[in-house]
Length: 110
Ligand code: HEC
Image (cartoon, rainbow, N blue to C red; front, side):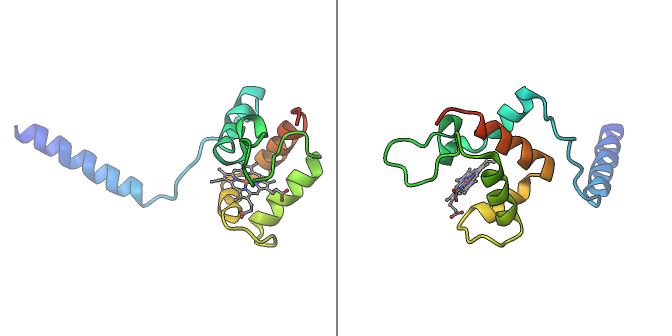
């Protein structure tokens, strides 16, 4: 019993010590499947495959020029484009991920 308590105490200490470190993220998965998984994060608001649901006031992403999507994301991220949500969401993606997402959506049919 004491051993278990000691082990639990040690792992809690290790956990707390670990919590001092900044979070380490896995490297980007920019394979085609990885990019599709990233793009699925956008579906809740921009529609499945970047095509908004009928009646949605949100912009579609499918079939838009890659450079427009990339520019918008980078401007949101830099706080240079007014936004209610995208200034936060865009911060979750690296430059390479933003480019891959822009490329992905630009290739989808509107
Ligand atoms: C929680 C809802 C939500 C999610 C999830 C979301 N967006 Fe947005 N998006 C918005 C809103 C709302 C706007 C309008 C700007 C604003 O108010 O933030 C927008 C605007 C945009 C625009 C600008 C469109 C234009 O023509 O001006 C782009 C590009 C964009 N989003 C890309 C993405 C991408 C890529 C993802 C996934 C990584 C994503 N969004 C996920 C809500 C969302």
